[in-house]
Structure formats: C-alpha cells, structure tokens
Length: 138
Image (cartoon, rainbow, N blue to C red; front, top):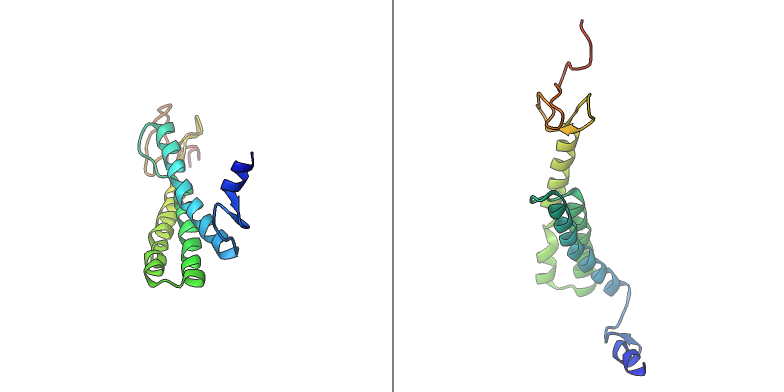
C-alpha cells in the first residue's frame, strides 16, 4: 500500500502538483467546464434528441470565469487569458435566450404540459391552449 501512497503523495505534493488556492480554482474551472459535457450527454440521451440544457450554459460560464481568474491572477499568461477573455459572452446570451423561451411557453389547462409559444393545441392531449382559453365568455 506504500507504493500507492508514494504514487499519489510524494514530497508533500498530491499527484506531483504543488497545491494552492489558485491551483484549486484552476482545477475547479476545469472540472466545471468538463462536467458540462456529461450534462449535455445525459439530457440528449434522455430525450433521444440533441438537447443543450441551461445547466450546460451555467457550467460553461462558471468554468470559463474560474479559468479566466486563474489565468489573470495566477498564470498571467496572455495566451491563456485571451483564450477565456470572451467565452462568457455567448454563455450569458444563451442563458438569456433560455430564460425568455421558458417564460413564453404556454400551460395546457387540461394536462399541465408546457407547450411551445404560440401553440394553439397541446401536443400531448390535444386540448386548446393559448390566450383566452379558460378565461370564460365575456
């Protein structure tokens, strides 16, 4: 078992890496950025169609900002800084679009299924949906 300990912890370094707060922030950024692919894969497999859930964009944003912080405050490497300086812009835009789309969906009064904006009928039960449904006669 000593061989395993020596392999992972040697000369006060875990896996040969000298750990500090910025190293942890850099690795957290990598972990967030990498985990988004599992989120997207799971959502796609669940629906059996390509899906990019909001969690993918949140993980992308968190990962890129953590890696940008690591690059600016620890590495001070212009190539690394430039690689993450602008990646957050499309992530925020996609989160805004996702929120707008979610807010514009229509509730089916019959089965409570969320239907796409401007739908006239529910895709699940066929009930009429949209403005004026369920408000009664005037």
